Length: 276
Image (cartoon, rainbow, N blue to C red):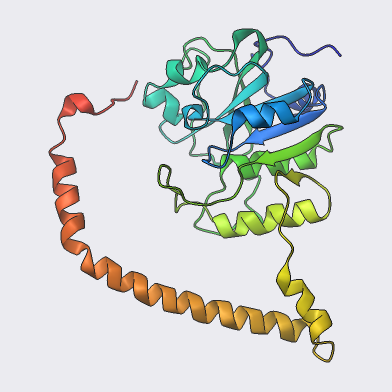
């Protein structure tokens, strides 16, 4: 099988061009920046005909140069991509073997997000995909989709011959990396799991057996709506209890947070990264 040459992303701008690129591979594997991802094991699990798609700060999951077919997705921001204004492009790009690295796919999901040029990425071959409004008709208001979620949905819509695999898409916090509150992680997990249940994509590791589904057979005299509303009632109660405890913790840590904010303001300027 002939694969696209390194740097093929240069000047790609249309959905048709990107679809043609992804269609050249047997698997398209989206790799989340998660502690649950072991890239070496992941690469060994799939054939050399697979394309591995990484996101932004890949040093979270790569500690050495990746040798497989690879693509980096860099999300636009109002001030430009974060790896650009944080001057991390060189640190990120060096983690991909040049001969198998297709380049950067710079995406945006809102009109306020500013796309970057190849020169912004230090000359790295760069293409663009404008998905402004792509998730607007169904994504929860006041929240913004993650790059991984948006690209997973976009790939499904393309009806690719390739199998779509999601690795590390768990939305779990870790001791090293936080889960950003601007995204609706619960909604995204529901959406992606439903996609897996209708065989649109595969979430690596699969989905655990849904114990709640067995309740219908255990209580055949109750309609499905009654079971669902009972589950929702219990979850709502537990969330309210959790909120009350969180409020107490916030009150107890007010002094600590004030001290932390004060110390952060004292941080020397030379330790802060400036915009490019």
